[in-house]
Amino acid sequence: MTEVLVRLPEEAQSFVEERIATGEFASASDFLLSLIESARKQAAVERVDQLLLEGLASSPGEEATPEWWAKSREEWKRGRPGAAQP
Image (cartoon, rainbow, N blue to C red; front, top):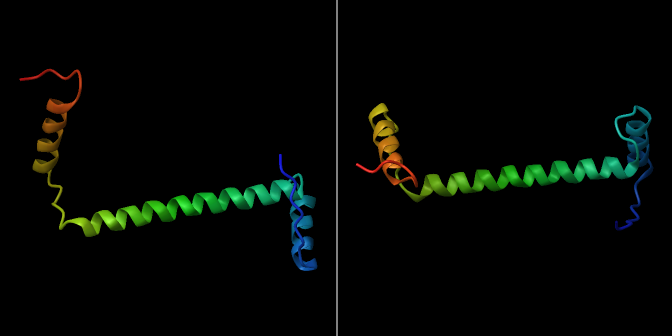
């Protein structure tokens, strides 16, 4: 494991110590790891949002009516491995 020295303003250090005192975190390292995990999750959400927006912008789309779903299910059944072929 890598050791990192982090210098914090007194107010930030007090905040971290309060979180540890409440038992929310066992150590400053645990607090920092939690922040990193939150940042990773946020980055993943932002990436999914970006991909969704790109997908929406890539074509005009098609309305997903009950008929569209039925047709799509049939196409999927015909194309999936191991499915009975007509």
